[in-house]
Amino acid sequence: MTDPGASATATAAPRSFAALRHRGARHYLLGAMLAMMADNVEHVISYWILYQKFRSPALGGFAVLSHWLPFLLFSVYAGALADRFDPRRLIQLAMVLFMAVSVGWGVLAWSGTLEVWHAAVLLTLHGLAGVLWGPAGQMLVHDIVGRAELQSAIRMMATSRTLGVLLGPALGGALLVLCGPSLGILINVAIYLPLTLWLWKAPYGPRFRQQAAETGTRALRGIDEIRATLREVAGNRTILTMMLLAGGASLLVGNAYQAQMPQFADDLGHGEGGLHYSVLLAATAAGAVIAGLVLESRSLLQAHPRTALILAIAWCFAIAGFAVTDVYPLAVALLFVAGFLDLSYNSMAQTLVQLNAPVAIRGRIIGVYNMVGLGLRAFSGVTVGFGGSLIGIHWSLALSAMVLLVAVATLLSLALRPAPAAGE
Image 1 (cartoon, helix red, strand yellow):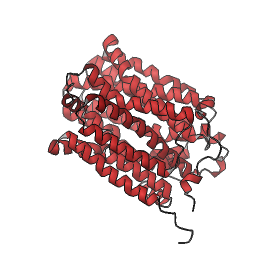
Image 2 (cartoon, one colour):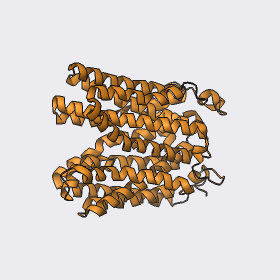
Image 3 (cartoon, one colour):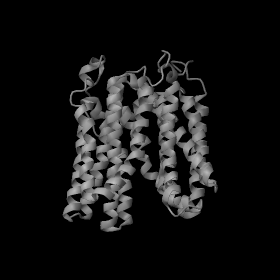
C-alpha cells in the first residue's frame, strides 16, 4: 500500500524557491524575520537587565522555563483559536504582546522600579505571545501558498526565522552599547510594526479560503480538547510518527546544548569568549540558513516520512560527534551540519503534519505538534544539563543523542512496514 504521507504531498514538479513566487509569502516571511529578530533583541537586552539588576541564576532559569513551558501547556489551545478565528488577528495580538513586553522592560528599567515579580510577568507574557504566534503563523502560510508549495513555505519560514535569530543578538548588542538598555529595548518595539501593519489588510485567512465552508467552528472544550485532538492524531500514522519524532528530539536533546556552550568552548581550548565562542554559538543557525537556501534553490528533499527519519538519524550522529570531539574546527563543522539537518528534517516533519491534518482541525493538530516539538524543550535541560552534572556535559549530550537515535531508528523500522489494509 502507498504510504499516506507520501500521497499527501504535491504531485506537480517542484520549483525552486516556490513560496517566494507568492507576493504575500514574501511580505510575511520578511515581516516574520523582523519579528523574530526583535524577539532576540529583546532577549539580549532583557537578560542583560536581569543580570545587572538581580544577578540571580534562578531568575535566569525561570527565563528559560517561561519561554518553553507555555508551548507545552497552551499550544493546543492556541491551535484551536487558529481554527476558530482569523490567524491574521491572532498574529497581530501576539505582536502587540511582544511590543507591550518591550515597553514594560524599557519603562521599568528607565525608572529603576523593576522588581522580580515584574520580570516574571514580562517573561511569561513573552512566552505566551510566542505560543499564540506559532499555529496562527503556520495556518497563514498554508493559506498564502496552498498545499502544493507548503513545504517550500515552511522551509523558507524556518530560514527567515533563523536569520532573525542570527541577526537579533548582533542588533541587540549594538542597541545596548549605543542607546543603553532602556532606550534600546524601546526602539526594538518598532521592529515588530512591519508585520503587524501588513497583516491588517492582507488578503488571506478564513474569508479567502476556498475550503471556508469545510472549516470547523467546534467550541474549545478545555482538557477534553487535548484528548480529542490526540485521538485524531493517533488515527493517522504519518502525523503520529512525525509528532513522536519531534517530541523525542525536543525532550532528549532540544537546544539544551546551546546553554552549555561556554563549557564546550572552554574544553575545546577557547573559553576566553570572543570570536571562537561566537562562532560555536552561530554555527548551528548558519547551517540551518544554508540548508534553507540550498534545498530551496534546487527544491531538494521532498517531504516523506522515511526521509525525515533518516535525516533525524544523521542529526543524532552529528550532535553526538560534536559532544565527544576535542578538535575545535571539527566541532564547528559538526554544529553546522547539525543545523543543516535540523532544518531539513523538522521542516519536512511539519509539512507532513499540516498536509495530513483534517482541514477542520488543522490548527489543533499544529498546536499538538508545537506542544511536543517545542514545549518538551523545557525538559531537555534535565537530560543534558542535570545529566551533565553527574557524568559530564560531553557524555550526557552524547548519550542523549544516542538514546534518541535508537528511538528514531525504531520509528524508521515501523515506517518501513507496509500500512495495514483497510478493515484490518
